[in-house]
Length: 178
Image (cartoon, rainbow, N blue to C red; front, side, top):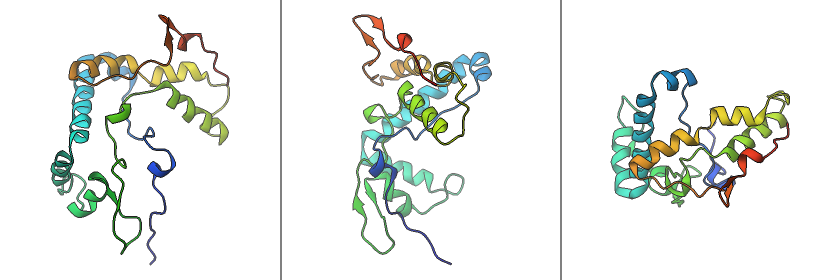
C-alpha cells in the first residue's frame, strides 16, 4: 500500500485563507444569543492564546494528542503547530511559522469577501444555481456583527472596514452579480 506525501500546503497556495469555521444554525443563535456569544468569546480567546506563543501551542498539542481528542503523537501534531512542516517522509521538517494562524492577521474574522469568493467558486464548478441572491446568502451566513460584539469583549482587534469611507457603508451600496 502506497502512502501519499504533502507536496504543497494551503498556506503555500493562499496564506491566511479562510479555513477555520464556527457554524451554527440561525434558529440556535436566535434562541440562545448568550450561549452563542459565550462560545464565540471562548473560541476567539483560544485562538488568541494559540497565536500568543510557541509555548502555548506546545501546551495545546499535549491536550490534542490525548485519546479523547485527536489521538495523534505529539511529534506529529507539533509539525504544524510550532512552526515546522514535514512535506516528505524521511526529510527534515521545514520552517513554516505561519502554517497555522488562528487569530493573527484577522484570521478569525468573517469577511464578506471570503463568502463572495466561495460562492463564485460554487457557481464556477456548478455546485450552486446562479439564481441564488449572493448578497442575501452572505449576509445571513457571515455574521461580522456577532463576531464584533464577542471580539470586543475579549480584546480581539477588528480589521479596519474596507466598506466604510467617510461614514458611509459602501458594502450596502454594492450590487452583487449572480
